[in-house]
Length: 114
Image 1: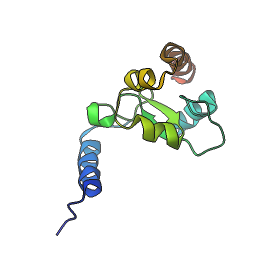
Image 2: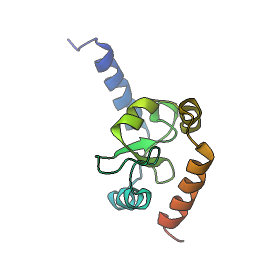
Image 3: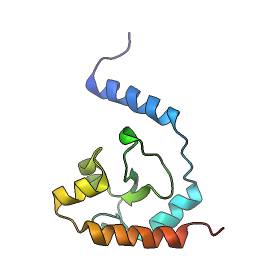
Image 4: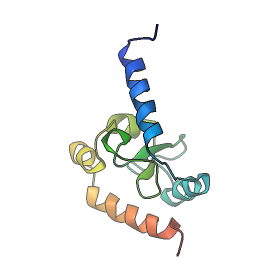
């Protein structure tokens, strides 16, 4: 009998959502993103293991793509949970305008030409 805990239920739901969408972020693109950001895209923390964070969460229709993923430290990623990035940044009183501008600049720099 499958576990009925909240964690297990959430994990099963997430697994089903992940299987329904195409994720096209390559390892090379992820390496380019982490290099370009130079740390957590939100707080700037360096040296910790960075996680792939979807600006538009998978639970809200996002997917792992070059335009939707930024590197995040574990603290920021856990804090953001499944909120959209601008909502979370306003709540944390972070400079969303600066973040979004930098995200566009980095995307333009690492996106393939053509």
